[in-house]
Length: 113
Image (cartoon, rainbow, N blue to C red; front, top):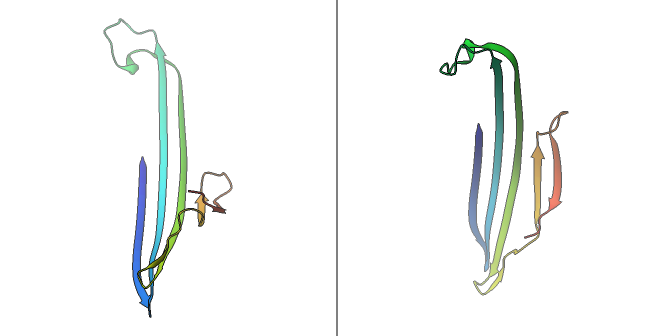
């Protein structure tokens, strides 16, 4: 099972001749993988295709799970629709991961690109 949830909102406003475009967002993603395997021997013949027709000799079962969430934002600015400031790179992001054993850990980092 894998799911991804993304939400963004934009807001445009002006103060005198200063124009702003603000973007804010939240993303969350989670994945869970499960695997089962059973082995058997001593089947009556090669035509039998069900595992319960033989003697079960072993089996395994594993599961793994991870999740991540992010908050994002951007501000574009212009003055008199003539002088523009749009961030090309940089900025700050906050991400949290629940892939650790002891709970969620959040990190702040600069993003490049």
